[in-house]
Amino acid sequence: MLLERCPWYVAGPLLGLVLVGFRAALNKPFGALGGFIDIVEKKPLWSRLGVSGFVLIGMILGGAIYAGVTGTFQPTFSYGTTGGFLPTSPALMVAVLLLAGTVMGFGARLAGGCTSGHGLTGMSLGSSASIAATMTFFATAVVLANVFTWLTGAAR
Amino acid sequence: MKAKLLGLLAGAVFGFVIAWARVTDPDVIRRMLLLKEPDVFLLMGAAIGVGGVGVRLLRAVQFKALLTGERINWVSTPIHARHVAGSVMFGAGWSVACTCPGPVAAMIGQGHLAGIVAGAGLLSGIALKHRFDRRGSAPAPANVSQPAGHSTGPGL
Image (cartoon, rainbow over all chains, first blue to last red; front, side, top):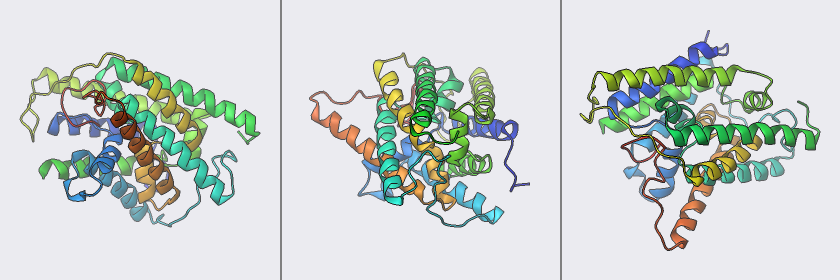
């Protein structure tokens, strides 16, 4: 059961419950970006990582537990090719992924949230800024993913 | 300490579920962005729905946060240019990497090591943003690290 992809109507409500549980315990927004910020800000002092740092560590752990219980843990450097869209040469792939990650990190920090913080938590709270941010990053990503696919002639 | 453990648990459930639902697979995100598969949109919608109803219920019954004792509440952040500008950057990076901060963490846990490259990118983007802020004379707005729409908490 766990090996098969969890359908959206189970996974979505479960994630919703995580947002609610986090709010019920701490009255705080749930998101992944804060953990990355925590790491950047407290780099030499890991012991001072805050709640958001622990959320991020939990996410890594959650992925590991899933892979563990399904017996799918198999370290690989393969990123798929996301449909022939990313370069297949490892060096180029690392460069592109690093650059894309940097742009994402800078942008999310500027916008104050990412897909989980703005897209799930902020949207569930009905925050104006989160609605604007979520519409913007979805529209940008959908348009650019199609443009890049067309430009590179990658398989759709 | 309790708060950090709770963060770890919430993160772990979140990471497990997104791995189970294949949100950590860049090919799945790419199919979503190319509008070939509705699942992740539906998943996010369901999470927002359940989360939105849940937090409003907590607020309606004047629930006090289990660990902090605060009454559950939040404020909606008005839209600033940075929410849109940052989200354009975030969306651009997302369209190439086909992953975002939460899935990056969970995929690392699953043993998909290219996630470390994307994660390193996120960290450097955040560090770069901090450097830009320090260079400017004015300090960064106090709420920059906060997701929109939240009254408390050190950012997402």
